[in-house]
Length: 424
Image (cartoon, rainbow, N blue to C red; front, top):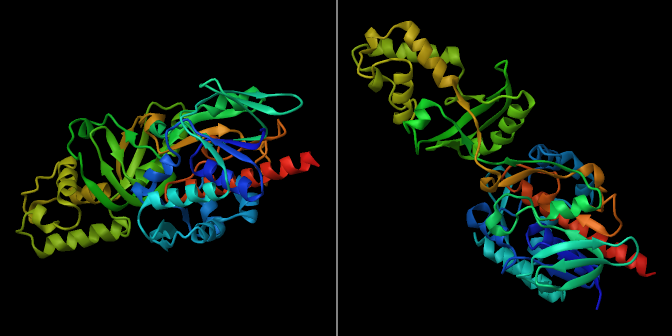
């Protein structure tokens, strides 16, 4: 029996696409190369699955710096509130956490995966796991043929490619879909890691002086060659044995990659403001006053509590200030230099961990070649794309999964409608 729609890939966008096509009455086959569906969903949000974000649409688009504007049309048809309703109808109670992030009340990603699998079963979607696709024949006329490495072939009137990017490869996204897209003339924009830790060869990193130190609610900036901030994120971060990581770093990472490429730089300067809620001059005056009040106390004790102790001692050493020196003996210039480094500690990063270690893939199938309201290929009738294979990427916090579920919904719905139209 010929399938109406074949969905390749059982991640968030593929599962949603198969459900949407099934709900339109299409005969759907979902193919995945792994042994179980929803592997990326099951580990997302630290195993809790951040299913979407409840911020207004304009805010969500801002949090998808990689071609988020392309999604305006899609959001006018199916948006984040629709995602929430969709899961609640499947019996998944959701709760809102900080910054609009939506999680299952159970705190278990597997409950989300199970609800999706149960919906597929209810819609009689045929599922083939452990079935890697080796090639797709896009015939000029007639059906599309999907060939598996197992020697099986499947024909279909419409195919949805939902195989993800190249990040987190242990979940099955190893970049298989790019060659199939190129086969019909699609452009694959350059792939690069985003939402990824940054590497540095600064002596303090190599000597592991700050390894394991977390800084809360700091402001981290990526600077251009003239020293102006390209982007700033105020969140947590952590120093590692190879560089820096944590939410603020992940969000800055794509801007580091782009700056290195744009200006052909071997290193990019970052600026760290450990006290973003204080301005530099008032902070200097505040510290000066503290020292005047207790001139006989050691500088370390006067400044205790201003910063985490390890970072405080690090910045004192960086400014060649003996932590044991009495406040009265600390020069105004040294205090000013220390204050400046609290607000603008600059250091260099020289790249990122590999694309395979990234949370998200930047680049992919060019959105200029995709119909924004249907996710249909402009190059080939009956071909649809959704999820991370597209050149769309957002920050972590429910934005990438929102993009995956919305594009999956539209791809599935419209692939089924395309088949119905062609049957008439």
